[in-house]
Image (cartoon, rainbow over all chains, first blue to last red; front, side, top):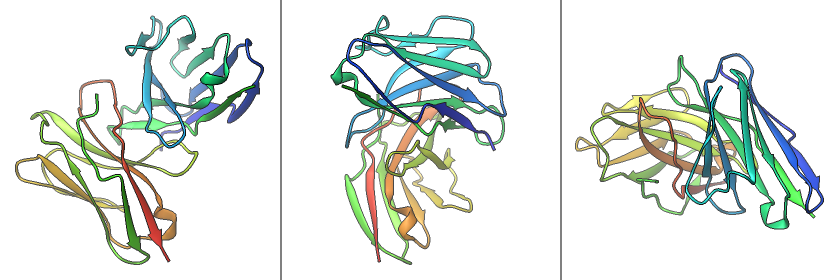
Length: 116
Length: 110
């Protein structure tokens, strides 16, 4: 089945630095990928929609200059958290829509970001 | 924005059927009902989806009411590994964004 690989699974960074998270579709092409953020004991919140070859679309209230999204190929989208602060510590999850079989979304395993 | 309402938590005895309800009273004619679950600190996992007919697969059954304003996910024989947060989501099959509601935290009890 469709697999989305997310890397790294865990990352700790210092406040003020930037962190890049990768999301890859392993056995299918994903023209559109999605990035979510999840705080402890809360639901997933959609941050942005990543479109291959074009600018990402951000949800209301999400700072596009802070959360940089690049979708340069049909199998890779990256999320860069710039100038990270402790309040950015969260669980970040990507997903991609599969075009065959299940008409839904396949999710990555998530990245636990801790900013110290 | 999420268009579904689910109870925040439920318990189920191991081996029994788990019935998870979802209200989606504002669902439109072209919107599907999807169910995903999330085990702690993992990405959501697809379970099942449907439009208006009941659906069954190897994981679960989905019962959608005739007016489509609510649905029930049924796990026929719950195991401890089914302990997770279950999300009911409605969206058009041709659209893009996928919004999560608050979900139901299911605990399967030995």
